[in-house]
View 1 (cartoon, rainbow, N blue to C red):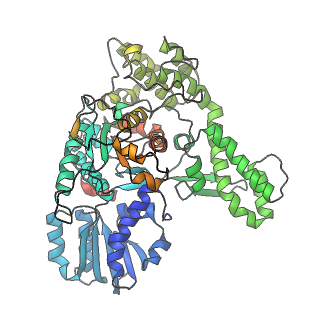
View 2 (tube, rainbow, N blue to C red; view 1 turned 135 degrees about the vertical axis):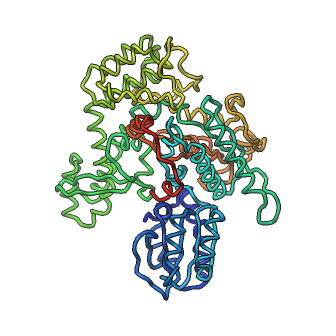
Length: 592
């Protein structure tokens, strides 16, 4: 399990768990067993570690669905999702011969009456506590959350899906638990488009929030708080998930095989090693949003500083030099370990960059931005694309470039598309490109036009950028416009109004402006929560931190069903035409 984080959402979630589950159970003062399902295992792992639970008199953590030895003299805490699979497993523990002395039951969310009654009728005498604690989302980072549901993408966008409505309903329930955990009752807005998913989800969330906050503890109706929730679909910016990003976190997750935030690598002595990339690694937090050029410069400098402090010869810093130093000086090992992890990861990223990514980036940036490094408009995007198609890049890289070309023109002709498909040799996999239409992104058109391609973007010509990193995710414009009260209500209708003084340029920020900019101070200001239907990218996650840092008085929190990488998105897009789909059940989401 992770260490308790001092960062935003994770700290808030752990505090909430301590105030509910832990506080209840500490009253009896005896050691207990904690039983979790797959979702609550992930939830707890994201915000605490085993030693934190031991401090709270929890001695063993068990899996609800695995065979367990009975411990009839001990009390058990069940923290689980309100599904029939979980409730059945719980009942089985007490039905014939009770496995534990008694049960303290906590559900992540509202437990349906039929499940509650089933549990009550089967084993009520063993249950000491039964509560719903309203946390059915995962705090991924300080300002990022997910609903832990990558499958939602297919269930919402597949033309064969029969479960879109049920999926949106479940996402709405999860969003309500996020707002409840943050103690926010936000005004809700959505991006108007032809797909209508954002509007549907906005209506669901707003209605469910109204019901949730109908009466507070004092019997009064809760008023809206200084928060705004924006809901938008993935198709609003198809470019950002496809580009090769050169900031450290986004680049690493795109180019390196990182699974469950774990980076596997070989040490110089040939041993297989792994490192967890999360907010317990403060160097990762410090570097993750920096450009790879800066990271490649900074890490060797840090290592040299440590070497100098140990009176090491100031030679060229390489991984083999470091491993020699570490063998000679065991006390040196701890200081250098985290730096060597990032030195290795940055080196891996730079190998990919030197091999092919650098060549791709110029064409990608020109197509995405619509102009070259000098600011000259790209008049013939086909000339920009052709060198990529003629070079021996991978299939996925060529598909990404073709998509950027198509996005730049708001679609291409059937004839052109067939040529691209033949050129990239994906005749049997044309869904990689065609299925973007299911997200509302134009793919086939009779009259492509490079000049009608993009909505108005904020002018960033004065910003300092790297030549191969000129593109800014569209969501950053949305964040900044929202904070400055500049979102056009024709494009962003209000599902429910939020307080007039909300956000960056109004009364809220004026009161906050003279305060210091620590995270705690910002938390006393307003919150902008943005939910993207269909997945968020690491570059978009970075924008939440950048805008929060720039504005100071408003904390931006970004969430989605899941976090995506370019390759995972392409594979999801391709799979949309598979079908017919099996019917979705909530159990599948919670216990997959």
